[in-house]
Amino acid sequence: MSSRSIYRTLRPVLSSSVLSSGLGTGHGIKGHVISHLPTIRFLSSDTSSSTTGNRQPENPVRTADGKVISTYWGIPPTKITKPDGSAWKWNCFQPWDSYKPDVSIDVTKHHKPSNFTDKFAYWTVQSLKIPVQLFFQRKHMCHAMLLETVAAVPGMVGGMLLHLKSLRRFEHSGGWIKALLEEAENERMHLMTFIELSQPKWYERAIVFAVQGVFFNAYFLSYVISPKLAHRITGYLEEEAVNSYTEFLNDIDAGKFENSPAPAIAIDYWRLPKDATLRDVVFVIRADEAHHRDINHYASDIQFQGRELKEAPAPIGYH
Image (cartoon, rainbow, N blue to C red; front, top):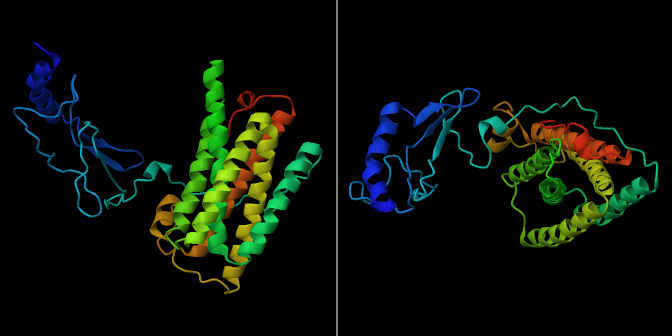
């Protein structure tokens, strides 16, 4: 009997067994309910069956415009609800990815350049700041979107290169891969929040395309040549991000920028109150940037001491 024939014979039995055992549903994490549509695949990628035909599951996953998302590969769609029973609407992050940031962090800290590498990193960032300020001036929303498209690059590059290094050397990373990828994801969520408030114009998208291409390759080369320099540059970039968001807050407080309601994605991601405003969002984003500042200066300090990152525990989940 061929493997396909075995599959067609056993598939109805396996599906009914899963349904009767209740394996298709269960409780989630931190009070969130997660349910999976039971779909069993066995030995073959052929979805046709003499008993089931090509019908869709009872509760297919649909897009916003009502189109059914195919479950051809048998990956069970996940349904998540909030503790209050309402549906979880985001696919870009899950409830357990949300958090309440530590906003008590010192946003005024500055790493004073003490050697040639530090000074090179510091003045590189200062020189990059000049054209940005001339172009955006007080257009905070546009500035923030460009800032986040750049700020999400270092963590991804560093995490990727550490990942490859870990594979080459057959060794652990000390958690630094996860820590840096967390940083990149957090920066990307900042961008996803801002685009709920404002859409970039075509020329701003063109600038992002060009800047990201240049910055990614330049940062990649700097990390390959000197990781401690790359992390120091990122630390100074994050210091400037903190300063930019401080100016943003000052203009909101002065009435120069409308303090509009916070977007729903920000309320769920940072666990903000339902009546949160843009000021609350910028306030927590500034705290995130301050934490990224500390992580990267810390990573650079470790390597300046002649040690590898894996020798020091990574600050995973440091918000």
